Length: 392
Image (tube, rainbow, N blue to C red; front, top):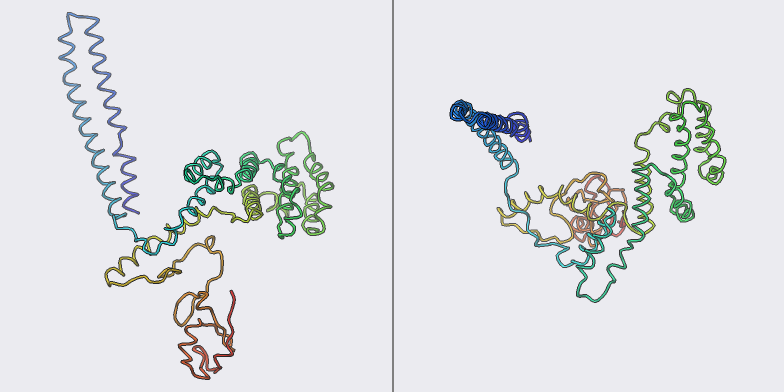
């Protein structure tokens, strides 16, 4: 990327059109001045044209030089991009699991549009993809009213820092949230307490007005939360004693968190989607991002396999391990330390009596039908029938 950055900097500093525009404006000014003088004194029009000839020629020469620099910079930029992003063929979709699932893809696109608040676009998209099917089942299943509610609450929370719609929703679904083990209702109430506590910073003439409002709010709301969050609510009330030195108190991180509204928005999205049986992140966004991360490695695998005339025969797993960020890891994965293959339902992980775990196929290959076998990783011996399947 260094060559691209250098070309970009060159384009910004020297190879842009600013000099050419300035010179073109000078040329216009010279011609305009010559025309005005000739109109004012028709008898000296020929003299004015002769006087303007040399400055016009010089300006055109500077314009040519300016445009040469621009073209040179563009060519350098283009070359740097081509060198970095070579035009290689993308991996073929021989084992594309989604090729025969257009409805699933269309639904993922429509749901993504709804999550982003593009409700009219989502409805138009669903209407067009279901046109001719004689059914509005796809549109009905999108639950656009639910997502509309989520979008309006998130808009108030993120953009307006208005907690009331989210708190009202959490209070309405308090029982379901508690059954899910969610902390959302308390997190929103805590944030409201902090908001009231620090509100007197905008009203210096009303000392202690903020803490008093926060205390009143705590008396009203915290009793219902004290059963599960007695320690947390007691800590928030204890912060009142540190009002004058809150920044150096143990409660500083609670009252000076610049990401508090973003964290509350993420928690609300997770719980709202969870109650609808959906993931907190858009499946389309997750799939496209993970695919983009994996694409360079898959392209290299495709190229190497083509050179050696190999073939990717496994449909349910990738031919190589593709490291993904923690946010894209949704479940545990077991890779057999013997075969280096990922476990599947047909080839599950098996625990030996000594505690080591290998895949079932590796166990069968290692035992070779013998009544006893030696563990591949320690001196202990065991009978294959004593090995147990592990569920991860």
